[in-house]
Length: 268
Image 1 (cartoon, one colour):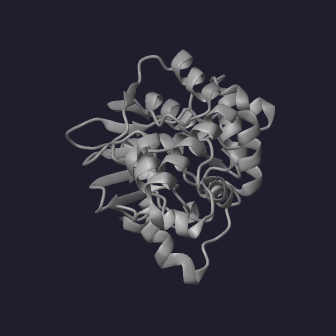
Image 2: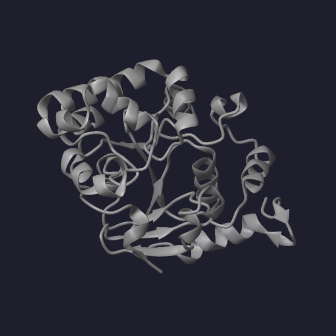
């Protein structure tokens, strides 16, 4: 039944469903980008209730928390699993460790999917300063995609109210206090979160280090900048900004990004 979520005088459920219906692509189904996180769970359910044609796609990054992978496998067995353009470990060995200023990983693991499609997401303004720049409908010329973000103005409380009202499943990590779920040791994670993730998923953290060490052995520029692979990895874990006088050399050592972050190529 529509109209269950009515905050500040707005029927956000009906509003989001109408947004989905108003922007449905003419000749093909929506490409619903699904991660298994709380926002994509809500976006998927709203799309299902809207009655429009759609496909649900999940990117198999290889570095998602195991609990999240199991949750998706158990509760959404019929979604389409998209393989990465290149697996993360050979990618790190070839290009180095991704950084906020050189975040090439998303391009190879996630953004390569849905080319030329209308992509429906669970992106929200409340998630970050970068995402506050996003719009309800966006056109990416670089990615040849149209993005529709029907819950972009929802708060985190709105999302949880919807989940509990409609008795939707969600990943158990939220009940343990995790507020955001994504790739383990994502370059956008803070140093504090990095330490928490390393303690929780040491095998994935070790795989990051081993791939970085293989990069270090093969690249003289990395050896000139850091005395050891361990020192390079520790610098990465500390999430310190790249000093201005190091920026050009860092790009040379780590490899250039094929494209800017997704928001850089969007127009409304």
